[in-house]
Length: 333
Image 1 (cartoon, one colour):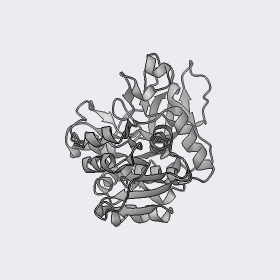
Image 2 (cartoon, one colour; image 1 turned 135 degrees about the vertical axis):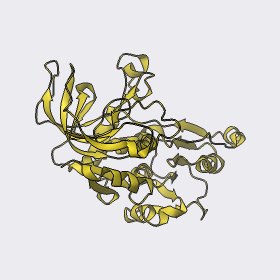
Image 3 (cartoon, one colour; image 1 turned 120 degrees about the horizontal axis):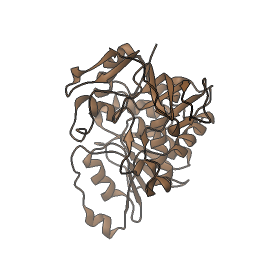
């Protein structure tokens, strides 16, 4: 089979190779990959950015995906050949206190498929049945592959920020997660403004506008004092603005990750009692909620996605890095 393998520290060390199909371990299923999304963490790993030194090579990339079961091991129950699933990407040990409390993404020994071990930018992938989430057959593969980042937006907007009708919400960051956070907040009845960088005016902000989301670039100003600010850009200046400008008693939900430690006026945080909450990844129930929103037609994300074949994986990475696409989806064929 084919797999996109990162074998070294340079971009050119990530290439499509012919490798044997995975040999299943007890409790695993073999999925035939239908589609696999490419996200920011894949770009960081591809470039060997700071903070991704822990990624051990060689490894097959890819953690946002949908597949069909083609083989199971004897101990697997509840899954049969032909079943369709998305996979929880950040996987806890299932034994510690965090996992027992339902916060598997906080597990101190968590692993990430496609970074800690071989992922789904391949024809086939082996996954523990503990981390499978069923998905209906009528959801197209390219949309199903986006369930993982949609679940991250659900976690940031609904679980962490608890956005409700009538609130004023600013979302900073016009990537796929930022746009879908804004869409989820709009669906909740909030008054939403999406902020993007000036270069997002070419592609990302117009795509969000077509979804009925009000947009603005960060250099235009005029975002006022929201009740909730969802920071999805990973830009230190955006976090500083969130803490300074969010309404007294308001909430800042931080889902972006930062390449350098951000600086902010924490006196503002104290004096105006701003609540600052991190929002990391998601859990299985949020995958299920994202799927239910897709089924109800509440997440019309088709125009945010662009398909690439597995042979075009390098082109997909280059397009993502240069922001000439919003969400690349790699479709083996």
